[in-house]
Structure formats: C-alpha cells, structure tokens
Length: 268
Image (tube, rainbow, N blue to C red):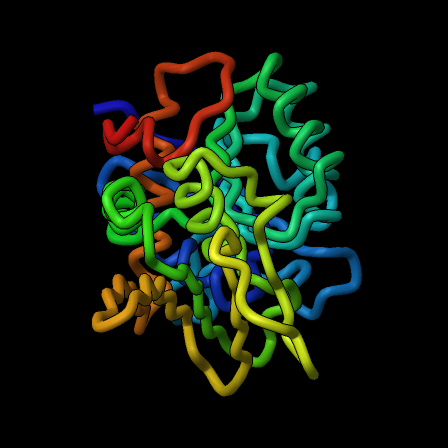
C-alpha cells in the first residue's frame, strides 16, 4: 500500500481541521505538513492539537517548510491563497487537490497552466454524493428540455464569502451544457423590482446565507402542473474530506494533468 504524504492548507480553519482528522484516521495516509496564513493564531501549533493527540507536525506559513515532506496538498481555502500555493506546487512537483471556490477566469486559467507541471484535481465539491447528483442533473436536463423552468437554490453558513456557491455554479454549467446553452449567457443571479416575465431559456440562481448550514443545493424543474426537485443536503464536512482523500489516491500515479471528481468516480 502506497502511503500518501499529505499537507493541509488552512489547517486552523473548520474544513482544515476536518481534513486533518480524516487524514490521521486513514491507514494509507500520513499528515506530512500543515499551512495557514501569516499571522494566524494557529501558526507554530501542532496541527492536531485540537484533537488532544499531537501529530508532530507544526502549522507553518512558510510554504517551503510546510510542504517539505509532502507529495500532496489539499487546499479548501480562498482563491488568492490557493493561487499562491499553486505556483509553489507546480514548481516543486507537489500534487494539488483544490476544493476552493470563487475563482475568476484568470484563476482557472492559472490552474490549467500549472497542471502542465504537476497533477491537479480541481472540483468545486469533492462529495461523492454531490457529483453523482450532478450526473442526475445532466440526465434530467436532457429529458426536461422543453416546458420546464430551471432554478438553482443554494444555502450555506454565514461565513461563506462567495455567491453563488461553486457547487451551484457547477450545477448550472452541467445543466446548461446538457441543454446546449452557455451559462454565461443564460444565468440570472438576481431579481428585484419589475423584472417582466421569466425568460424560458434562463437558469436562475437563489442564494441563502445563515447560521451554520454546511451546504444545501436544490435544482427545481418547474412546468405547468408539476415540479421536479433534485436536492443534495450536507450536515457535515466529513464527506468533503473523504472525497478529497479519494482524489489524492486517484492522483497517486499521475505526474501531470488537470482532473475533476468525474474522473475519480468514472462518471465522464
């Protein structure tokens, strides 16, 4: 069994801690590094101190120190941080699993370019359940392509900084692709005032932020006389962490290339 030497970015955050706990629990994985932003309260602490059983890995802000013993970096942080990590990983051959959302087109292009130098798995949602849901949405959209209005509703905790969520946008892209549309041209992200009748070719988005909601997504296909709803609701970040470990295993024998969870799950 190949042991996966993994570093975690954002090690002091909620998702970072969930990833650390998951890596420590997996027999084929070893926590080899931990990163956080300069000045974070966690810098210098043992990465597993919150579990009451130190792992012997200090949280670092210096990339060279934090990634010195790692072959993989799992990154669920923010675009600016991920892009900084991306450049280092590409230069030093560290494989990267990116669950960060909110990238602009330039950021996505930088990820694609870095994948020429190292193996990268980039997915807005690492959950196996969410990715299977995406496949269901593709099938539904192809068969509900006439007479159905499509709306995507997502809800997350009060601390999430980007909207709509990366998962909701990916759902929109999957549906638009199945319908032969370009999401950039048919997406509607806000409605207020006198908007006029709904454009039947549009895909609408609604965003909810509040409390500690981990992540809920519902796609509504609404026609005259019936509604079809396809939903995925998260009550824990654990399934994101398990998906990220599955992604690392997938990348183990890859040297370069850009992949997503469809590749991991054989859904392409």
